[in-house]
Image 1 (spheres, rainbow, N blue to C red):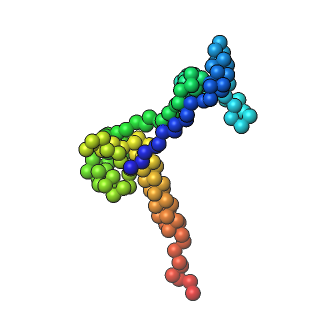
Image 2: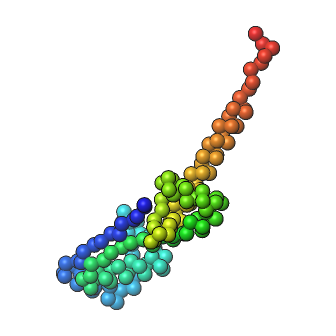
Image 3: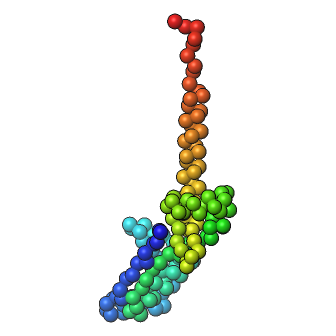
Amino acid sequence: MALIAPRVAGALPAEDAQKLRQALDGGTDITVFVDGTVHRLPPLARDAVVDLLARFSRGEAVTVSSVEEMLTTSQAAELAGISHTYLRNMTDRGEIPVEYRGTHRRIRLAAIMAWLDGQKKKQAAAERAGTATQDEPEPDAGRK
């Protein structure tokens, strides 16, 4: 089962929280620097970062987690172009990670996309191997 553990950050010390609160009050320009380079965040990301900082400024502990799209086995099988039974068998063998919600299997969209990408790479490698053997000149039977 592939789970992404949330990251928990404790509350800031009161003095740091106060400084952050003062910086956020009245400020509308949120600039992000990564390794000295300025990055402009898209509105959704900016809003999430500001919300995170505001929670820290109030002295709150914060948990950050990802929300990934989870598919039923029927949805995942349809997306992959395989049968529902074949997909269930692959999850049973551990070839595709699965999570359970009660007795129901759920598969991350990213897991199906990774499996499809792997299948494409295998197919391309097989085609290259087939092409390499076809392109090799056959030995001339008439030569000695």
